[in-house]
Length: 235
Image (cartoon, rainbow, N blue to C red; front, side, top):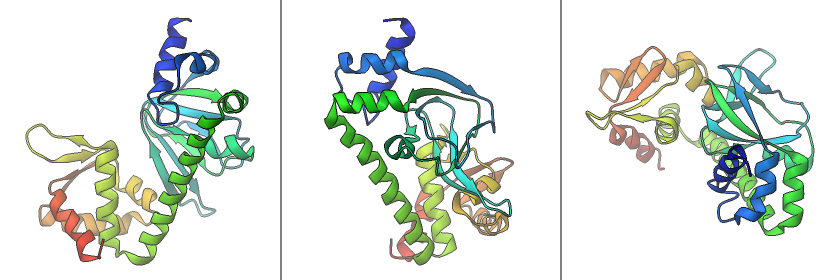
């Protein structure tokens, strides 16, 4: 195998779907996979496009979401290194259910649908892992819907910021603060609310020392303080 194929195999083997798969079974996928580079805000695919491949993020981050007819963006997920996406269309062969755009310079490993299906046919047990990935996304979608109905806006924001801090946060060495390099508009898009609503809550939290705000980033100063909002709402 070439150095590129070996690297691809190692990347695949580190994912939840392919973890534990013998190298011999991953060799074909590793050889067939190709690399794709995207610039910041470059579109990967749009809702309704043919779903002919699945992706593994090697570096960078990809935003998956939709844009309403009035131009409002809603972010479903921010996919980071080591994570896979695009699996829905792989199974049903239907069109893309959302848009995917690079949130920053990104490098992806692209696996064609025909190659994934051939792998599943040859290694049926691992097809269950793809179904598990879909179930996890469905559970997440259900949780977001439940939060929208039952949680107050401050509690939803606290939960979202804590989740983002775990997923993409950068811990500061001098203290336990965590910086999320996302604009308030990006957080608003992630939650499906207005930027004004996000700014109103964050400004109050900044005044009491829970967060600090800077252009294009939000720093959490007190995880414990944000967690209290979830306790107060019964979560």
